[in-house]
Image (cartoon, rainbow, N blue to C red; front, side, top):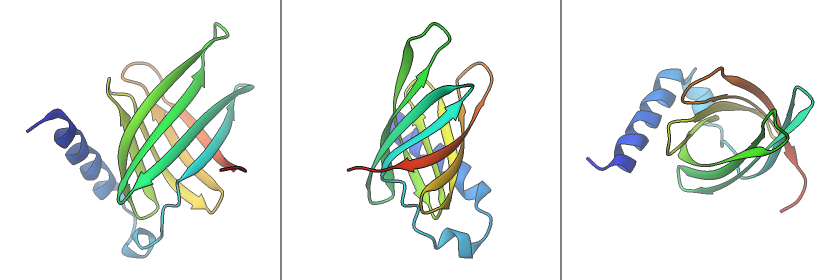
Length: 124
């Protein structure tokens, strides 16, 4: 099995196990667009596109040195739940909580997880 297919199978399994109810699974994730969160006074940004049940995105997380880390991710949507993974193993997993809000956790391959309260930003 190639690496991308294995990644998608793992992400689907993670989402399937975390799906709270069939009613929640019927919601459209609506993740497409630009999002931001403030963590320790720093702005984290995320931008997502969608094709069928797949999402593709770019997450930018500032680091302590004043620069930032950019992660290109791919993942899946199952109802209001979404998960996307970077090629090196970093994982973003979350739930759309409203039309313009989402709760997510960015878990790096190593190190502490980063909880994110994402808010949709206006624009294309």
